[in-house]
Amino acid sequence: MKKSDVYFTDFKATTTENLPQKLARLLRVADMPRIDMQNKFVAVKLHFGEPGNLAYLRANYARVVVAETQKLGGRPFVTDCSTLYAGRRKNALEHLETAYVNGYNPLTLGCHVIIADGLKGTDDIPVPVPGEFVREARIGRAVMDADVIISLNHFKLHEQTGLGGAVKNLGMGCGSRAGKMEMHDDGQPVIDPSLCVACGQCARHCAHGAISFVRKKAVIDEARCVGCGRCIGVCNADAVSGRFNETNERLNRKIAEYALAVVQGRPHFHITLVRDVSPFCDCHSENDRPVVPDVGMLASFDPVALDAAAADLVNAQAPLADSLLGQAGVRPGTDYFTALHPTTNWRSCLEQGEKIGLGRQAYNLIRLK
Ligand code: SF4
Ligand code: SF4
Image (cartoon, rainbow, N blue to C red):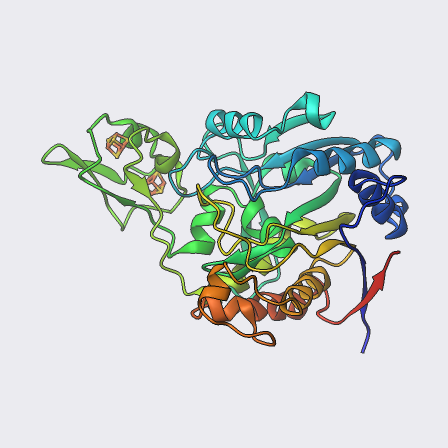
């Protein structure tokens, strides 16, 4: 069976090589420099973290990735798309504020921050994809305009997908609001009448005439709504949200197909840091204690193999006693992702990724000293 190479190093630093330097060495040994970046736009896709959550990756790591692409002649920018839920990253202004507050700015990064799907999460490109569940992915325009894709991933557990790594960072993370709607649910948002203040913004921005008012509350006509998600982005009262009613299994498979839409036909490279392995997504505005000790840094040209390797490395650790895993009495040798989130199956995402040609689950783990 053919295997993909995944390069790994731990977080041990020395007086002659600190962690940023070690990450830079990992990228070089893993052969990122073989990508022709000369005068190319390089999208470095990551998650800025929801305010209040401190498990997200420090900007220092992104700075290393940016600097390495610049040495190769690339023109990098750091990017993400807006969220489907009402948090502090649901439009470009709030998302940029979050990025800056969490330490991601041109001074710390050495490049610009771009919210890839525009002011209200609607600036996307339909991308044909040979999937089973997705025919046309809706991807943030700036991501699709880039010549090279680099994903920088914080690896953690996830309440809907089991784990969050490279494939999720690409697939869910690069989806515009309409794309996220397609992955998460049956494609139509809902309005909470208790929050609606009847400002009329959603109705004005709905291009399909799907919103009307009943007793001074906005309501959506499901027969007309096409699930573009525009109404979510324009509601400053946070009254509109996605349904999040897709099964976790189908969600994972759609994410893999969206990830393929992002990388197909372009050079791509993936970096995962397994540290602060929190039990939930970085979209939470809090982070509980890590469930296992920090493990290390990984890099690969194959996002599927990268996630498989990171999952195996996490499962090889002993649960931390004071974490949700430890408190639940989960024993070593268990699959921690399904132990903590029993309705999820992270393998379905990787299986789907392999099936559609995104990557392979089998890997060679190459350890750097
Ligand atoms: S934008 Fe929000 S608050 Fe305004 S009418 Fe629509 S749902 Fe109600
Ligand atoms: S999702 Fe799009 S089509 Fe549906 S109600 Fe909202 S703005 Fe209109």
